[in-house]
Length: 223
Ligand SMILES: *Cc1c(COP(=O)(O)O)cnc(C)c1O
Image (cartoon, rainbow, N blue to C red; front, side, top):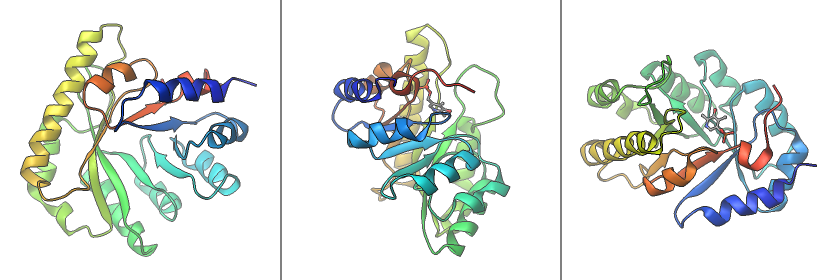
């Protein structure tokens, strides 16, 4: 078997205090997750509703599952009963649907707003301006069953460390801006989710509080 435990320990030893690990287990089998679990890892990230459903049903119930991928509004109802955090919320429509489904389950679901800062073309993530606009319009304040806990982003997938650093620092500065303006009295708004296998050491220098690491722990994914 792939040396999951050794890899996990090595990654954890590289994380400064205050940075938590979300072990990204998408496309990896239960036994890999169990190995990490035995080492004490409790937060895992998945990006497909069906796969997550199977894993949630068969793995220990004290695992905190984070949904990290693009989530279609029609899928929210399936994960609402148990999801611990939805990391990539990029529209008011999705936020409202999460609120609606969370209410039905009588829970409050933690979410992060996903920023699109990287140079790559993608339809996902809020530009800084559209994130400002969403927060300024204020409808999110009425949504009692979602808790906005911070921001999430993916830096460009490039070899240029300086570019990655610039993008992450821009996200960190943007965090300060919205924290001050909208969440100054809200201690729950504290998460900065950036850093993956290839760039997490940079993320740790750029004020990340939560790194999302898959390949470095579990090996290459077989799609
Ligand atoms: C797959 C994925 C990761 C993990 O990527 P690795 O390169 O395997 O560490 C992190 N974040 C998101 C949003 C992902 O989809």
